[in-house]
Image (cartoon, rainbow over all chains, first blue to last red):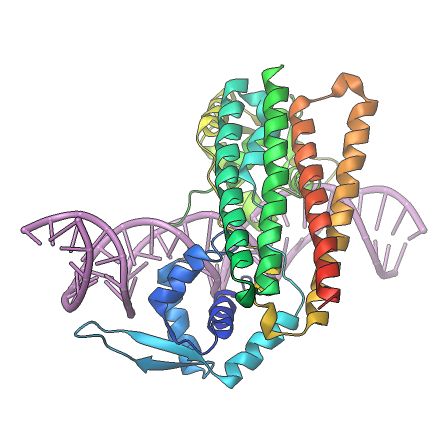
Length: 181
Length: 181
DNA sequence: TTTGGCATGTAATCCGTTACATGATTAG
DNA sequence: CTAATCATGTAACGGATTACATGCCAAA
């Protein structure tokens, strides 16, 4: 048996916090790829079957809402689904297996040339800068709309900022170290 | 098709940097669980088949070295294996899919009670403290043996320190924020 | 003597990605 | 008109975990 599936809880969570707004599978996928992109990812090939499964178990409710001839099914979380979500939120955080290929390659650094490692670190630095900027942007947006400040979202944004900044500093420091070898 | 297998490269990397020391599957597994535990993980159910596969392809060499009646096979990396490792080290870092359940649960925080989130954050703070202390300990050991300083290992240890510190600060800050709600 | 560590292996299972597939609508 | 986006689905494949399985050796 493999690790317990977490996709259903991501779906329940997104449907749960979205107020009463019903969402289609496509919209849920877009939300995963934008608002929680640095935290989680799912493929749509995984998402659609999970939606059907959750609906058949009564955790979400499906409603057909075709626009013109284009089919579209939107989902709303049910009270039963909210309970399930709550139970999961209360359960201990399940740690994911660490999988940091950059650190791994640096750890094996003696088996390659310094410029190779510098290339990897520069790429990481640039990626991290982009993430940091996006988090800062989100933070600004939240500050501009004081009505809609959601403290939980702010906490997660601050996590992104703290970790990106630390990673950026480390990368720049390490680039100097490698350049000096 | 799923993502390309990275276990073989972890094995080649560990056999590569271990000088000329031949290692058994058991020892490789132990190394994964200790020296790179915060960076990577593999199950032994995955490891042993990969060892056989790598040996059959000529990337590592197997030698039976029974101790008494206990069977033991040790492996050494071959020149061909070193080349394969180098090629992988030079290839771009493949990003792992983000999977941060703690941040996810905080993001869905409005669907549960504050004390639940505090519990999760406290657990994270304690785990992170332990990792930070271990990284600091490793750094100290490296400084005590100046002969054996491996700059690459130090860089990865510093990554652990930077990121743990940042995560720790963020967790403590967030705990204060939640306590004030 | 029995617990724990050493040591290796396989089978079942499944989560999740990639690729295949189809079609409507809208903007340039 | 045609490219991009909206929208939903399934099939194939495989990487990886968990569980099952076995046995030796040393120390308490």
